[in-house]
Every structure is written in C-alpha cells, then in structure tokens.
Length: 467
Image (cartoon, rainbow, N blue to C red):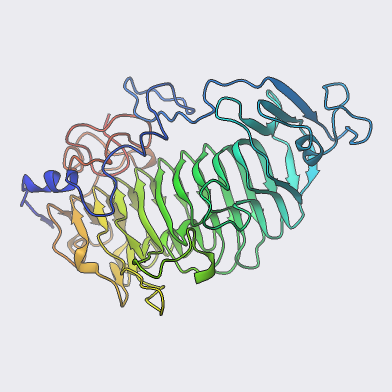
C-alpha cells in the first residue's frame, strides 16, 4: 500500500488559479443563487445545496386545467370544465399561466412550439398539486418542446415512447442563443423509452440557461446507445439531485459544442457504456453554435462533474474531446472495465479544426474497485493531449487486491492515496476514521456535498463530507 506524501502547497493554489477553459467558482453566478432551503430534506445544520431558479418564489396568475375527463371542444380550462389535452391548454396559455394536468394516463406525441413566458411570469406545465403525477404514455415522443422560453415542466411521468421521453430543442436555429432558453425540468419520472437504440429520456438540443432537478431517469435506449439526458450544443445548464438507473449508453452525455454545464449531487447506477460522457461524437451539421472555420472547435468545454455517486457502468467517466472539463469529489464504485477514459472521436477535418481532448482535471475523487474486473485503469485513445491533464488528491482502493490500487496515469498524480480502505458506512459515506477525511484539495468546485452539507476547508475525498 502506498500513500504518497508530496503534499505541496502548490496543489490547492494551482486548482484555484485560472486554468484555460475551466470555470473557477459556483455555477455561473448570474444564473444561479444559493442560500435558501433546497428541494431535498437535509439534516445537516449548515447547507450548501441550494438552487434558486428563475421561477423561485413566483406564483401563477392564471390556471388552466387538463383532465382525462375533459373536452377540447366544450371545455374552457376551468376546474369544472377542463380541457382533454395539454396541447389544447397550451393554445390558451400566456405568461403567468399554470397548466395543471390532473392524475391519469394521457397519450404521448404532444408538440409545443413558440411558447414563451416572461422572467417574472413564466409558464408552468405539470401535475396538479397534491395529486399523483399524470402519466404520458406511448407515441413517438411523450412531449416535444421547440423554441420555448421561461418555461417550467414539472411533476410528470413519461413512459413507453418509441423515440424520446421529452425532447426540447431550438427548432433548428443553431446560431440563435435566444431560440430556447430559461427552461426548468423538475420532479420528472421518465423511464422505459425506446429500447432498440439511440433513444433518450430527456433530449436537449440548443438550450441556454436551463435546470434539470430532482428527477428520475431509467431504462432509456437499447444496445450500447441512448442516454438519460443527452445534450447537443447546450450551454449554461445545471443537472442536480437526479437519479439515473439502468441506461444502455450513457446517463448523461454532453456534446455537439456543449459548454458550461454542471452535473452535481446526482446518483448514477449501472448506466451503460459511459455513465458520464463528457463530450462525444457529433455530425458537423448539428453543432450549436455552428462550427467555426477560423477558430478551433471542441465537442465540449467546461463540463463539471461534482459530488456525485457513480456505481457500475463499463466506464464511469469518459472525457471525449472535452476541453477544460472537471471531475471533482465524486465517489466511484465498481467500474466494469475502465475507471475512466480519455478519447478523441471528432478530429480535425478540413475546413474545421478541433482541439484535442485536453486540460482535464480529476481531483478529490474516491475510487473503490475490483482490480480483477479492470482491464486498464485509464483508457487513453489517440489524438488526445492526456499529458495536459491534472490528477490530484484522489483515493484509489482495489478492495480485492489493495497492493494494486495505484493506477497507471498519463501524468504523475499529486498527493494521491493508494491502497487504504476508505471505511465506508451506509450509502458509501465514510466514517470519521477514514483516510479520506481532510485529505482533499480545497478547490473552486468543492463547496457542497451530495447530502447538502458544506465541505470542510480541507475537504473529505469523495462525494460526502464526514459528519
């Protein structure tokens, strides 16, 4: 067993200094605020898990009701005379309207376009308060939203669609940052979508300023394809406090020019080939914004994976053509074949230049694995700049053979811990006697743990701060 002791003061200083392409503070401050009680109940006395979306504290000025007993011809959207479909209610909705979908089963295939609320008067589409989530079932897509803004989609169950559960996009206006923006997805349960190939629970294309929160995504796609959340050219997003289970391809994929997305406080279980695909491979015509012929392009930039619990999958984390992407304070348990991958799938092709996968950071992660199941600790593909990566303050423990805990990395790790049992308690938390306690670097991303507690000034390694 080896515990490296080169604890240089340069480690936390380096990680807090500006690194090209890497965000250095809480998620885009003008988009998120922190300080009130969060959605999940926490017992910690000090909280660092609060998200304030644009709709927080706002109330609708009007309600339109949808029910399985409603009528699109004679109904007027009132509680006593509801509409029969979401689509009919949308036709009557304006800023400040809440569309209340009452419990029951509704057919999928609803297409909604050019629906816009206002910053102080969004539009809500979701289940009725105090009732079970309405089920949107079957159809090619449960719900398709295009060119929408200041919209909150909440408290819906979507299942059995053949293509995507919910699809939200920019209507093909790839260069228009205002096409689809300020959208909240909250308390959704999307599951059992497709099953034959590249089908997604939540497909997002060309969104700016959006949140995916407190939701569950399970069994979307088939073979080695499909994602829980699939980003193509999305920007300034936060995925927080979600549960991802049993996906074939990925839990979350961020590609096609995606940038400035934070994936924080989620739980991932058995999520396919690459649980977190930071980057990917995208056809040139689908990048948002469109590819440049004068400056270098990238599949993704500044994707941040922070304080998540990741169990299973062939490779829990893959940096794929991702520039300046961060993996910090995660707990990774039982990877199937690789602990992580560094790949480049989209390469320079005239007239477009692509940056190599570069400047990734892997810091403060707790990796608990079976050495006999791992082929290579880190899979490094061609056309990458793996020598620009930083590995620091990670704890690696091969529980079947602790002497083989130290991974072979593309660069020398600073202050790694190898071969020491992390001493898990319940849910992969660590006890106060764990070698992970107080051994993390104090970074710009290390402020709130998976359960809402604040990390210590010298944080515990992994997704949880010790209590």
